[in-house]
Image (tube, rainbow, N blue to C red; front, side, top):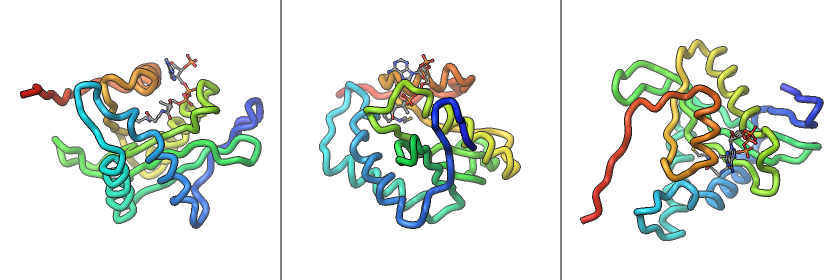
Length: 158
Ligand SMILES: CC(C)(COP(=O)(O)OP(=O)(O)OC[C@H]1O[C@@H](n2cnc3c(N)ncnc32)[C@H](O)[C@@H]1OP(=O)(O)O)[C@@H](O)C(=O)NCCC(=O)NCCS
């Protein structure tokens, strides 16, 4: 996919590029922490590594957004992932991140369009994801793209 106007293109990751995506994912991991939770950098990083390993062992696509030939963002997409309630296979966006200095230029919107197209191409009827309530940029992004809130995760501090 190529969006000439913005010099933005989306492609599958090249061999070895997963390490770059993992590094970016770890750098923005704190954005996913709900404000009522404590967190520690090394544990956050280990969790992100575990998530990448989980995806690597399953049918997945690592989509990379380039601007002017430079990789600036990625989306990690699972295919045929069983929905946690129905068990039916769906596409699932396990992680997405845009380099901070290139945000608010439509990169995430273009990545999500590419993820939706790929999931549809693979026969998926739905695309799911989880977003932290306090992550306003991500919540607004998904709201704007038509992603419904289906269930909520709750926590009470004791
Ligand atoms: C969330 C994130 C992926 C958005 O990336 P982005 O490339 O800046 O998003 P886009 O430019 O495509 O924005 C699309 C829409 O999302 C919403 N949005 C994005 N960033 C926003 C912000 N900081 N504040 C409010 N709305 C925002 C807007 O509706 C925006 O449309 P608009 O610019 O026409 O108003 C990026 O902020 C990021 O990488 N965050 C850290 C990692 C993360 O939270 N990933 C999501 C995990 S669920």
